[in-house]
Every structure is written in C-alpha cells, then in structure tokens.
Image 1 (cartoon, rainbow, N blue to C red):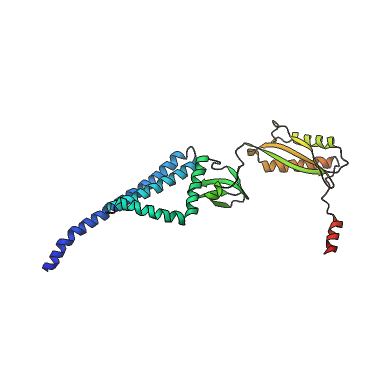
Image 2 (image 1 turned 90 degrees about the horizontal axis):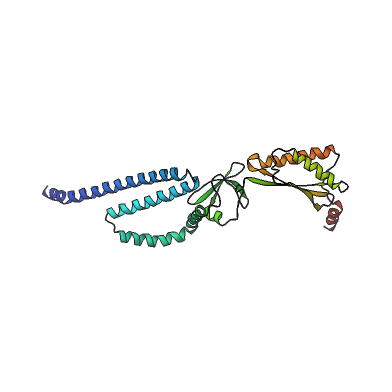
Length: 275
C-alpha cells in the first residue's frame, strides 16, 4: 500500500502536467482549425467580390499556412525544440520536393497563373484540343467546363506551359466561311447576292466591313471566302449557321448551283490496279 501511495505521489504531478499539455495542444489545434476556416471563408468572400479565382486561390494558401503554423506551435508546446522542427522540416522538405516535384510545379504554375492572369473565371479558353469555360484555379489544378458539360481538370503545370488562347478577351468574333460555285457564274453577281444576304442579317456587326471575294480556284469550283464580324453575346455559331442557310436560299432563287465535291475515280482505279 505504501508503495502504491509513493507511486501515486510521483505519478500524479507528471500525469497532471501531461494532461495539461494535451489540453493546451488540443485548444491550440481547435483554435488553429477555426482560424484556418475563418480565414479561408473571409478572404474568399472579400477578394471574390473583385476576382473569384484570386479569392479562391488566396484563401486556400492562407488556410494551409495557418494549419502549418498551428502544427508547429503544438509541437513547440509539447516540448519539441523549434530548431529541431525546422531542421527536420528542412531535411524532409528536400525529400518531399523530389518526390512531389510534379505537384510542387503545379503549385508554382497556379501562382504564375494568378500573377499573370491570362484568363479569368467564365472566360472561354483553348488549351490544345480542350476548349471550355474556366470554372476555377486551385492550388494544384485548373478546372474547365467543356461545351458538352464535361469537366476537364488540368494540372496547373500543364496549363502554364501550354499555348493559351483566350476566346473571350474581345467582345466580338470574326466568322469565316468558304463556299464554291461553278466557274461560269459571274463573280460580281455572286458578290452582290452575298452582300444582300449579309445586309438582312441584323446580328452582323456592320461597323467592320464584311469581306466577300474569290480566294481559290478549286478543282471544280470557284471558291469564295466570306468574313463577317459579330458580338459574342449574339451566338456566333448561330449567326454562322444563319449565313450559310440564307446564302443557300439566295443562290437557289437565282438558280446558282454549288457544285458537289468530285472524287477522281480514274486515280483510285489506277491505285487499285497497282495493288
């Protein structure tokens, strides 16, 4: 019994001190989580009023930074030397950097995208074969909503190293269409028909003069190129479709035919015989 009391006399102060440290560490952890959540929410709300992408990215960085400081503070209060922590972090940092070099390059890519600002939220961009609207830039990736509603998630390192085409940097877009007519048609007559078609299209931006001219001698057709301008908000794809439909109707009224594409059967037969 005396031995047990002696043990309690020695152990109680140590146990009390240990639980106080755990309580303190738990308190710091809870406060750190709260501050990280609060900072992320508050920063995103304030900065997103001007730029949603910048607000989202900055809030993520701030939240992670607060969590790192919280963890270091907890370890320091548990008696771990800060110098030792920094030394371990430095050594581990080199190993982590080598193992996660692609992820770190994506973080660096995200920072570059935020600083240089080649595009903003809801901008339509082209990245190689991918075209869509920008939904956001996170620490590691950029999200692009494609026309068929698929979500493309691209590493920031790939985005920053790609040739970026911002399709919404300007409020207008040039529409180009090439079509052919038979060689015996009068060039001026065709040009006047197209001019009349364009003049009746109310969504074409006539502040920029349309181009209508012969640009190629095809195998069995005289090829015209039409270039007009329209505002993005007026549905460029629909305007192009309207131009093609109205041109076909106008040419049919004048009995002007668009020759079909011909396939040279003689050449194909020679190739087949050679095989």
